Length: 301
Image 1 (cartoon, rainbow, N blue to C red):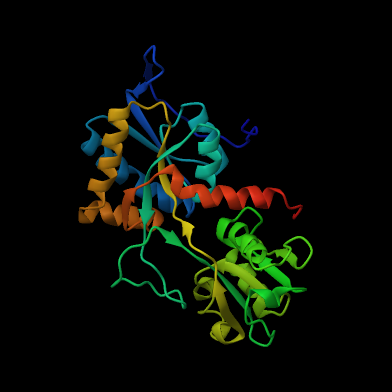
Image 2 (image 1 turned 90 degrees about the vertical axis):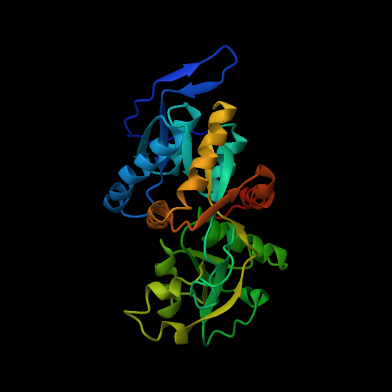
């Protein structure tokens, strides 16, 4: 069962009509965003998105911002939110509890090994984490991490820990015994831990070094990229499974239409750096389940 989650403080006012079959056709469609950026900034984009969705769907829409992913999953489980923007791991957790169904996956610009957007290349439906190390640490590949201290953003981060720990396991290292993990409390802080010599290496998104280059001009000289993880599926737009099938399809098409016009595309770009969407299937997240199951078998904190 889904663990009890605290901090759910969003006021929801959806009026929901349920037939005998359990199909839900709300009078007000509740859509919820995750505060991956400053809440005041997201609030500025919330109303424009709401207006665009109402125009596309021909119904009342209420767009709100969750306190965190746990709160959003809880709200979808309670049928108080019908559409949620769920990150990769959060989607899998919600889907496995029967509370979410992915209808779209986000598309973004790919990045090169220096974190530069490849705007002249096709959009991608996944991203990679990167392994960086102190330039003088003698780390040239994953196997060189044996006996080293590695900084990460958090133990719940997909790109900061789940994929990196599995990368070690895939290369014959025991994530529990062969390395020492250091929770730096953020991707930028993980880079700084390497820069300051507190750890030997770090796993972050590509390329977290760019966030520090202004204040630390030599960061890419002192902290060098070693390799990338395998691709991580992008985040999703998910709906509760009980939503009426025809409404699910209208919602899917609404977001596809929104990113086709300049105004809508700019709004989605500002909210989550989404450049487009593509249909998603649950099977595309099978690797996430495999890696999460393996991670849960390790006693790493």
